[in-house]
Length: 81
Ligand SMILES: [Zn+2]
Image (cartoon, rainbow, N blue to C red; front, top):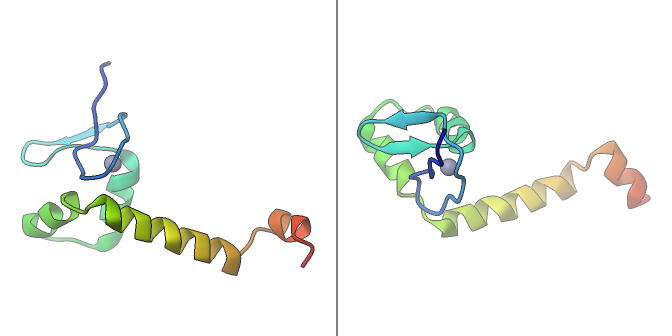
Protein backbone atom coordinates (compact mmCIF):
# COMPACT_ATOMS: atom_id res chain seq x y z
CA UNK A 1 0.00 0.00 0.00
CA UNK A 2 1.41 3.36 -0.97
CA UNK A 3 1.03 6.80 0.51
CA UNK A 4 -2.18 8.49 -0.50
CA UNK A 5 -2.04 12.15 0.35
CA UNK A 6 -5.42 13.66 1.20
CA UNK A 7 -6.45 16.00 -1.59
CA UNK A 8 -8.35 18.39 0.61
CA UNK A 9 -6.67 21.78 0.84
CA UNK A 10 -4.67 22.26 4.02
CA UNK A 11 -4.90 18.61 5.07
CA UNK A 12 -1.61 16.85 5.74
CA UNK A 13 -2.97 13.35 6.25
CA UNK A 14 -1.35 10.72 4.07
CA UNK A 15 -3.48 7.70 4.87
CA UNK A 16 -6.55 7.65 2.69
CA UNK A 17 -8.86 4.69 2.24
CA UNK A 18 -11.23 6.51 -0.07
CA UNK A 19 -10.80 7.97 -3.48
CA UNK A 20 -13.16 9.92 -5.70
CA UNK A 21 -12.62 9.84 -9.42
CA UNK A 22 -13.42 13.54 -9.51
CA UNK A 23 -12.02 14.84 -6.22
CA UNK A 24 -9.13 12.51 -5.51
CA UNK A 25 -8.10 10.96 -2.21
CA UNK A 26 -9.71 11.83 1.09
CA UNK A 27 -8.68 10.75 4.59
CA UNK A 28 -11.05 9.33 7.20
CA UNK A 29 -10.96 12.56 9.19
CA UNK A 30 -12.04 14.73 6.26
CA UNK A 31 -14.56 12.15 5.13
CA UNK A 32 -16.15 12.11 8.59
CA UNK A 33 -16.29 15.89 8.58
CA UNK A 34 -17.73 15.93 5.09
CA UNK A 35 -20.33 13.34 6.08
CA UNK A 36 -21.38 15.52 9.00
CA UNK A 37 -22.12 18.44 6.69
CA UNK A 38 -24.95 16.68 4.95
CA UNK A 39 -23.80 17.61 1.46
CA UNK A 40 -25.83 16.32 -1.47
CA UNK A 41 -24.14 17.90 -4.47
CA UNK A 42 -20.70 17.77 -6.09
CA UNK A 43 -20.53 21.56 -5.89
CA UNK A 44 -20.71 21.29 -2.10
CA UNK A 45 -18.03 18.61 -2.09
CA UNK A 46 -15.83 20.81 -4.30
CA UNK A 47 -16.26 23.71 -1.88
CA UNK A 48 -15.34 21.43 1.00
CA UNK A 49 -12.22 20.11 -0.73
CA UNK A 50 -11.13 23.72 -1.27
CA UNK A 51 -11.44 24.55 2.40
CA UNK A 52 -8.25 26.41 3.26
CA UNK A 53 -5.90 25.90 6.19
CA UNK A 54 -7.36 29.10 7.66
CA UNK A 55 -10.60 27.20 8.16
CA UNK A 56 -8.62 24.47 9.86
CA UNK A 57 -7.23 27.08 12.23
CA UNK A 58 -10.73 28.19 13.04
CA UNK A 59 -11.63 24.58 13.65
CA UNK A 60 -8.67 24.23 16.01
CA UNK A 61 -9.77 27.36 17.88
CA UNK A 62 -13.27 25.97 18.14
CA UNK A 63 -11.86 22.68 19.42
CA UNK A 64 -9.85 24.54 22.06
CA UNK A 65 -12.91 26.50 23.14
CA UNK A 66 -15.02 23.37 23.38
CA UNK A 67 -12.31 21.54 25.33
CA UNK A 68 -12.47 24.28 27.95
CA UNK A 69 -16.24 24.39 27.96
CA UNK A 70 -16.63 20.62 28.15
CA UNK A 71 -13.49 19.34 29.87
CA UNK A 72 -13.15 15.63 30.46
CA UNK A 73 -13.39 14.48 34.06
CA UNK A 74 -9.68 13.78 33.93
CA UNK A 75 -8.85 17.35 32.89
CA UNK A 76 -11.18 18.77 35.51
CA UNK A 77 -9.26 16.97 38.19
CA UNK A 78 -5.97 18.25 36.81
CA UNK A 79 -7.24 21.83 36.72
CA UNK A 80 -8.93 21.39 40.12
CA UNK A 81 -12.23 23.00 39.29
ZN1 LIG B 1 -7.91 14.95 4.90
